[in-house]
Length: 450
Image 1 (cartoon, one colour):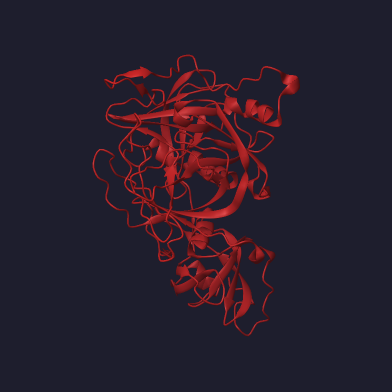
Image 2 (spheres, rainbow, N blue to C red):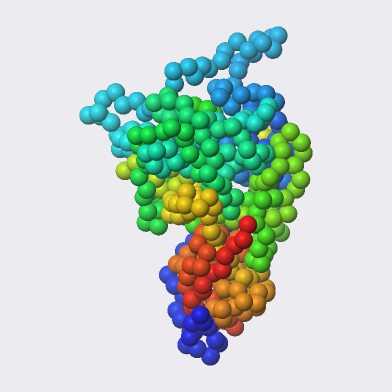
């Protein structure tokens, strides 16, 4: 359906308030392994792809991955060594569960209260396949054992499709689990615990009501240390990140991010592939609109909870940014205060659809877009597909989309991320610029086919 304001002769609409917000540049990331070689957990990371800046950011999936026969159930702790190279200090995890300890209720902080409330709903996930293994986190959705996590946790970052999955609850109970479905477009997955009952389901919050500066609390198993609690704030909203993925669905929508600015890193998420052999460079990508937080998120936090001050789920932790060495000899390590979480509103929709049918739906605009270079920041439409949502809404080549569904669009990646966050067939209001004038139209998105 085409809105009456889609033609240049119509009365221009006033730009929405969302257009006046600070520009959110997308994060574009380079191929990177999850842990440094001098730990006990995996191979060396490829060197960062440095562009204009002396220090680049590298976004890393927050999964603790262990290769070469090292079990993902082991403790993720660095070992001190004597002169002969033999380890002399090793952390032990025996008896450690995900419970949050509160010794004195009368002096417990807001963070203590929220974390203790949510901790029974957060689990540690151990996925293995042959000599490969990794740990991540998950969120309990139902009392009978449906658990939400990241696709890259249960597929070992895309290496396998049939990993053996074991889950440890906060009380120390270990469950076998089966994979219900994955959604590579949002990097979310649902597993089901075997013979589970009486579990405490996480309470959802409305991520659409978040403010920058709101308190955040992360719970998960970073470095295989279950029940770890960190806190911070929402440092940015509607931040778009682009992840290279060999499993990204083919679509008529073609996003061409600005690769020439050099201001942002590049992150590669190869699916499927094998971590025991060199992975092929992905030629497609997925785009995610995420919550940015400075709460410490580290490898192993992937799939875990990002909470508000009431202990409700506002997001599912997915990735972290790390600083690369200018010499190329360094490797990314843990949190530097820039972490990313999939908003709860998207996570809830996707998990509900996976539980119901084994898969989730996503919107398709039906247009080729790139970053706008002149006139206004936004997503420049290069081509409109016949019969697609963009054509139906009256959008044309040369239009610059600046807002979709109330979210500011500053470039092509923003637009793709917001379209993918919509369910197939959903409607949204788009604001766009044509010949220097601003218009609005209603867009009914199509269905992305995986």
